[in-house]
Length: 115
Length: 111
Image (cartoon, rainbow over all chains, first blue to last red; front, side, top):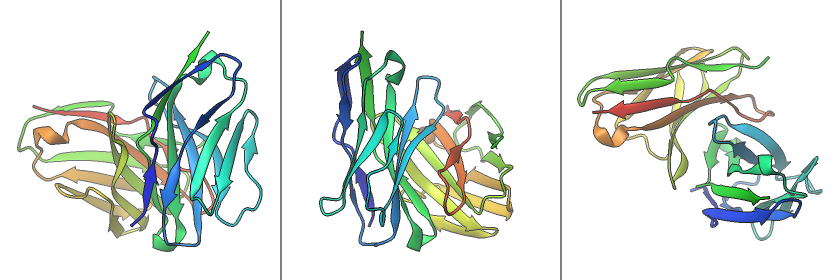
């Protein structure tokens, strides 16, 4: 069975500092994709970054980077230079392509950025 | 612009009622998903569909069913609503190579 685990229910970070949000996953499939989403208090789901299981380089999108360690089955999100607007829930997700494209999410991490 | 629309933002239903939650996407996506979101539990997959009339159970299908008669529409049905189905329900759609796009969510309260 597939599973996504986010072990940090809540985190604090000082403005302008970097922060790492942890995500581990479990699947026996070789073909999968890993995603991070942001959910501000307004409730919308905002896509941040994607990493394919066959991608050799870590994905980056602006201030977001995904630290992909395949052997450890981890896909941590790194946010550099945190901003007040980064305060939100963050969800890690995995898509398993050999199972009809099933997309599952972790429990989420609530990030609070302090001024 | 990409759009996933859920029929209601807020719903209040009585215990035992049959409840329909509708989701429509305008992106011609093959895949559609229904989740419920509860504090501390994240998004849990109820059902998903990878083609018209095709459906697969997610992790928590009990008490729910789905219908996908047309590609753009994916309906979630609560056959007999119960108070433990009070939650935020999120619909999403995606193609094989894209991220998922979400609707605005339906906050369902069962009294």
